[in-house]
Image 1 (cartoon, rainbow, N blue to C red):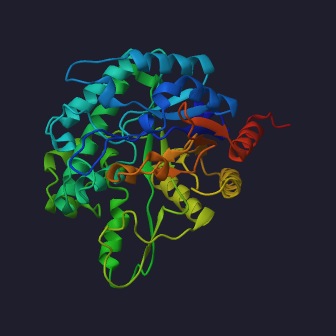
Image 2: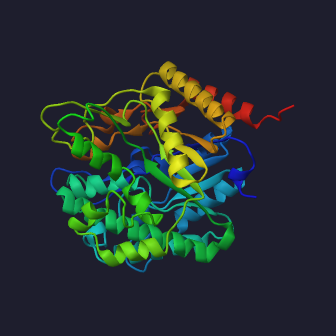
Image 3: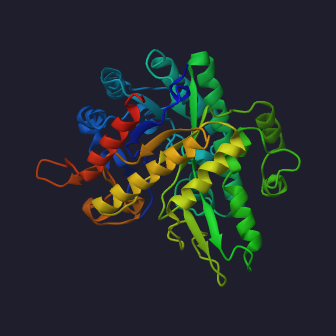
Length: 417
């Protein structure tokens, strides 16, 4: 029996693990482990997760660091981290691709050999840690990834428009499926795959002048997951659009024939950011990616998302990221409200198996990459621990959200009489 089949709601945390090392004029490398000093503090940081009773941790590998040159691997740092997970008894759900490629991969995701290289990396990791790690997320938030890299020209390889978006969707889906199948060959039935989507709700004037665009956005929210699970066939609402913008037909055929199915379907939901508000008038230049108008629909939006993904993919669902960037009191309120919703949905028969507070400690806003200000001005207050500047580096200061999380996690693990 795997961890999500024992009938309980499992509590976990995550460490923000975005890695975009490539830069051009006016940009800084974005490595959240470096910004949060996790490279130096990983041993104690994992201990913080154990302290609050986390059973699992979503934790990502900096591909560009462990694979500094094609065919060369440096496992030194990663070996210590994986040993620490085993020591603490925390299950790592390993994020293989949480944005970003190695610097030696010319063209990044637009490189024609990207799918092969990312699969080689996935297999190398699975083989090295086959005795201790069985849970993998092949690609985190693939549609956010595709939009930032392929539609908005915000991240490498800086493509734009629907053709660029489709090219990134194709590359990410191809690499996703190859990675999952490669890991499955290494681990066999022991492998568990947690797919993770950044959920996007579109509300407001959805039947107004932008109705066609809204319909497209709603379908595109599922594009990569539908591709990797073999759903994009004749009759799929995105099929003609993808083909028109350059999706290779042979790739569609291959994905349909060799799907990569989730054991757990993970959904990321942030109440203040995951719901886009559509209004009549000029279309926002950002294409409804931050800083587009949003609406806080709270647990109502979260319930809709969980029900939608459970029904669409027929797999157990986990809330794989959630929080509010706000005061401690506001964070505790959201934690308690969202956990209460999780229990209600489970009582109604929805197979919700995991709850993840993201992140374990504060992180830094992605806009740090395009700023020239100190990191402190990009701090996002989101965590169970605050990050506090000091002469000796960043301190981790436990706050009331950690207390509430520990209480709720312990209550869920208590025997029911």
